[in-house]
Length: 231
Image 1: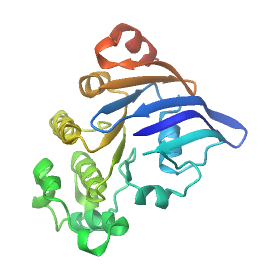
Image 2: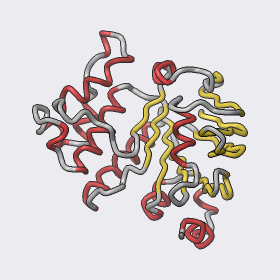
Image 3: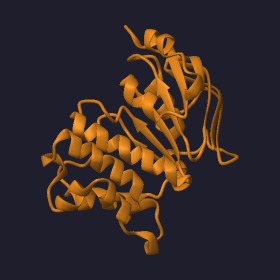
Image 4: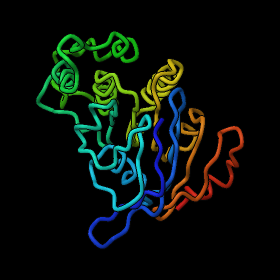
């Protein structure tokens, strides 16, 4: 389980996060919703170690991790699919997937079959350069690369952004499958409300660096959430 307790984060003198607390459990999809610029990506940077926190605590499987470097957090099972995908455009699809081997012992350095089961197009394009793929294919590659690391926590930042509807459905099915396995916590940051709503077990809504709404999906007041996502 991932727990954030009263996390604050600054960029210089500017405060981006204000006492953010949330929980993401294995076997569940936790969604983090909000307009642009309200602190969603900063929350993910705090979790993955891409930016230091100013205060509060981040705990993964009972161990505080907020003082660990990003590579140490990855070694503990945290995997991130960043906004913009950040694949290596000059590497092939195979080579991009194999960059996920870095945290694994030699005997585990294989691409799991489920990567190609979830995203068959990747198997068809193993020899193609990442930069030659469409946006949707690159997003599938970014998720596949994260899965190669055998994560216990999968963090997805706006996976539907700029993606065609058919691929959005494929990504939704993949997230649903990964949830059903029960051994992974999934934290999904989204602005596409219907996509996030349909997948969520629990949701949080951010505004101005704070959590302003949260609860179980079954008790969600959709009108209230939509109102807070509207500019």
